[in-house]
Image 1: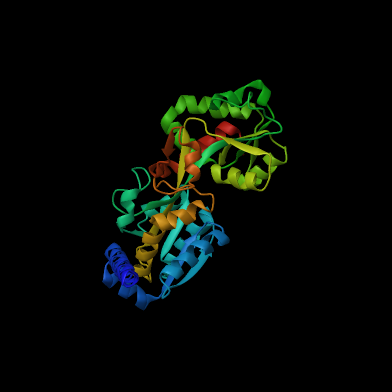
Image 2: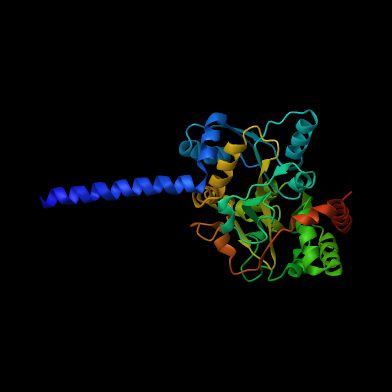
Length: 340
């Protein structure tokens, strides 16, 4: 009798769990959106993240919504923006959701490519990592940190401040991406024009090595061809360390965190699957997948977040509105560093 009662109680609890779990999922997204998504049955995702990382996220999304088949197109920065603009001019509306980091997607925001969608998950994202109107949210954030070769730089010698990089001992030892316009623009906003100019002109006098691409620079750092990178992505260093490279990161004040924003196409061919995908990516479940790719989440309830490694330093979200003066920032950056 006792055994039967216990079995009955378990059955009741299990049933309640399933029922309320199902209700919770439906409440997170109206039933009509779910039904419409079933009819659309497709999602086209444009993003700059590597194919294996995108596949992991999209596979989990398909598992949650087995009636949706996903397609991923990968291109980075300007190439992705150019493709979207070209398709738009040709009257072809292929993508549903896009994701990219930096000032490039700001152009699309300014030109009205995105639809408003205030996902219920957006409430977990702090100010600076989403816009007020609901056009975009930070799918992941990319903190900019200093990185160094542990065989060439001792803990005693690591810089304590950005301006320590201008000390004579670092001449000929520094590397930097040749297109750090967003980092420059945000430092200028925080420091002011004069301090920023002195810093970047000081880097130029250090015979800094300017190369396009942080991934390549991270490889050069690990190989000892430079001792320090004035700016790098946190995720690059974490990945390099896992592979056994002799590199380490150091978060200097302020850390500029670029927004890997995500948004829905105003003319999306599958608008309801797009909403489901936005909700999924921004959810705790989706963000836990993001941090497994070494990217950082701004949600506070996500375990294993790389952002936690630098939480004791001031982290400033990149101001995308600075994209309005992109050309000016680019010209100043190149002028101060002597880039032809």
